[in-house]
Amino acid sequence: MPAQTARSYYGANQFAELLGLARWQLRVGLEHGLLPGPDLDADRWSAGLAEGARGRGEEIIARFGAEPPVGSARAAARLAARVGLDVERPDIEVLVAQGDLGVISSFRGHPVYLLRDLDLLDPDVVRQVVTARKGPLTDTVDTAGAVTILGWPRKTFDRIAAERDLAADRLGRYALSDVQALQADEDLAHQVAEEKRRLARARTRRSEIHIEDVVRAWVLRCSAYVDRDTDQPPDIAPLGRAIRALRTVRAEIASQEPISP
Image (cartoon, rainbow, N blue to C red):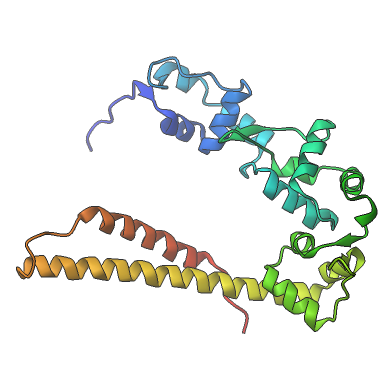
């Protein structure tokens, strides 16, 4: 076997790999001063500095977890499902302003939050924030709020609301207690989960078919060039992108749970 050449420096990807970290964990570790910044130009770490930080990867994982942080929209959805209230993005900002939730980092200029910090929030604190925003509307939710609480596609909620004859008031709002009852219905939750899986698999399969058509079209153009039916060879770049996309979508199909009979 050929001898391995000693690395003299590490780029960000190599440094993260050395520490056993994802790129977001590396970024957050740097932002919070748990890792040394690059000491070479072009944002690179010298081998000595990188090797000296080897043991800090576990510390960063222990502090920030393994799941990447989320923005305010997904944070609100996470809390809505957990506490059974129509939490919105402004509520997340209020929780931060009150000191109940910390901003762990930012992504494209927007604050992001750790999932485990969201999961540790006191539900009563979240309820107080939502109640203060909604005032007299606290005991009702509109369709968007119901969908947020349930985590359902809107079409699914509309259908089940019609099937269950769910009453709406003059503003088109539903009783919060009715929506929470839907959330607590385990049989219904299983039914909707199966439906969502079917829809997800169908979307993924449609993506696969589209990408396969792109590859087949490229092969036809290539054959036309080989057979001298055209003077211009096809651009190979779209084929590379299509093959990578096809690999990704087929991996996604393989990872999706089988649908119950």
